[in-house]
Image (cartoon, rainbow over all chains, first blue to last red; front, side):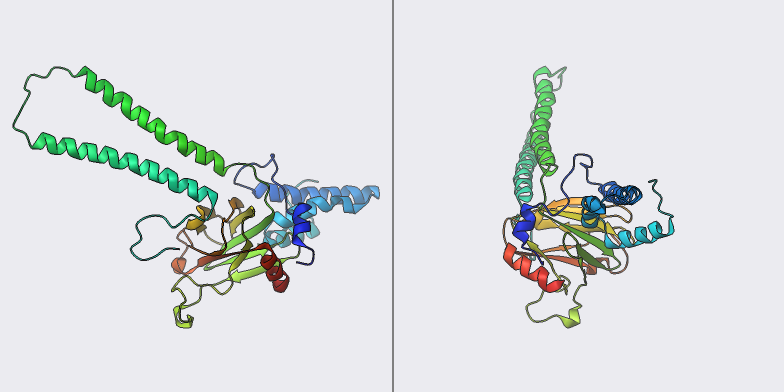
Length: 86
Length: 227
């Protein structure tokens, strides 16, 4: 890894356990963070805000979601056919 | 790891598996005690000519063999629930690793920092080197840091599979469209073997899993070399 893992671990670089999704099925956790990232990004772009604040959601969904799901969803976002309302 | 003519579980390499071993010893001891008591009573009944032909009731023994099984069940349930809740404790994992089942191999993704992903195919018997284990060796092992809490997210890209690691007490189904979480933590370094545990087609028996638990520094240099 490019950065020192100990520093990363200290900085909690992986998605934390959240009480909102306490159970074994983490599908919704991954999906929700993906949706939240795009929602924030859209809101920030619309209001001229700094998109880097959305980075948290992006980091979390990149940690949690399988790469194939992310690329399928990215295609859907690009087409405007993602089944989530933002 | 497993060995021929094995009777019990593999040695525990995670705290949960240690607890499961103790629980299994406890429950199995209860089973042996009850079975030997029943066997003794059967043999005793069969080996006597004495009879009691006018028994009307037997209040004391009826009470005992109603209350005692209930007590025994409580004594089994309490440690069982303790371990169940222990498995569900909130722990903050240090890294997240995804594993996806395919027909017929596993793929692994480490995406906390850079995108590292690779496939892990079984080494066919013809290509084994001397000392290798038949049907258990893979080309790319899952390298992980020991003694740290790791979040495993398990899913599938086609049919049902199951990601199992007996020495760590883990078995989690890989279901397409669903992301199942398991918490992994190894108490020691080494190689840990597992196999797919849900029938998934012709090569279901030929998609093993090998975890290579290493110190953190070695994990860091491995992941740098893989990216």
